[in-house]
Length: 336
Image (cartoon, rainbow, N blue to C red):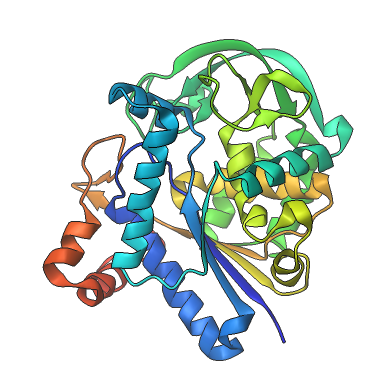
């Protein structure tokens, strides 16, 4: 019998959940329920979770005068409670501070081709909100296009992943839909990005700048993994990738379908960085990435960083889970 594995992205826990993640949970839940009707419940596995290793989580904890571990544990519980309030049928909820995740991220790093990871000094414009570097051309009036803040100029020695080696392979996989991106507009966006030329990207941060928080780089105590390198591996780690568990064999290392449901702001990470990392490690790729748009207010996206969020738990408490689920699916466009 065919297997079906579906995941949401795992959000940062620097603030309470907002309506955009509620949309993603409900979209993925409806797909999972439909696939269970087709394939049988035992053949479908639905994962969600929380990303606890980002610098912005550390900064949020510091702002409240609390330990990072205590803060992220409490905030992750809020995301878990949101899933429960919305009657989400996920099989698992992963936290990236769990040992199964730390061990799996370490295994993925060590499984990448040795020549694909190298160390060098680097200077760049870094947005903590996005947890990524930007070029001057990618900024809008000198600020991050999403978070509307000026990035920090960061200079340090980090490990890099040789993304440039995978440019032609990624273009081929995406063009022929062997690695499918839905909708077509996001596929074309990623192809255009690839054709401009892929640059190697940093996959570690100094332990000092990361406030000694994150997954340690194997063999280098001075560095922790870049949050996106470790976070993406959660899709493997929840299935027991580190120990090659039966769930991993059944739902990832097989010919079944693997689908990621994500927001458009993290398309590049899931559709370019992630498949390149898997190719380097010799692991199967997901079949498809479904990309939804932002939930907006007056044309501006709702986000924790911008502080314009709507609390989905309050909506559920007021109207009930089914009306909120229906509204999210009926009134908010699936893709844009």
